[in-house]
Length: 116
Length: 115
Image (tube, rainbow over the protein chains, first blue to last red):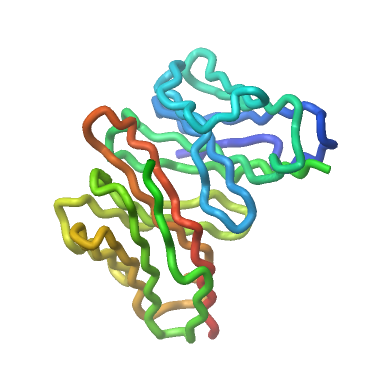
């Protein structure tokens, strides 16, 4: 079974620029998550989708971050404009069932973003 | 919201020794507690989990214990091997009610196993 795919793996931009990350979850997984992992910390949930609907985006800084999951499969996370404090690894995860289920979350390798 | 505290932040052991990582959580409604292992350059991977109706769970060399009264849970690794070296994260979630099952992670423990 192929894992969660993410691209790019690394991205370096200057502050105030825009950036987008892409995630392809495991086939058949209905729930998709985006996490932000700042160096030395645990992942923090930004947004979670059930199919193509948002079920929780309470920790997403909506003035600069946006995410979509068209057709309930792939997802993109965008930052516009980026700030220095956005430097982090952005992890995508997916799981088979609903967010309230006990299904395992499978993580992708992440995209390491550096904002200069 | 939920808050998860994890200790220690770094742990160094000799191969063959045991390692223990401890976490506390704040919300008594949390009822699902997974542990993840993250190797360099990779995403976290689930290694074991426990639900609130169970006090202990074991899987070969790893075990997790849960004390609901104290809101405390721990990861135990026995007979450690160099390949156990990684960052370990605990997490807590509410898998019931109106919650959407959001995972709140601890800060992580860097485990180093010396040959």
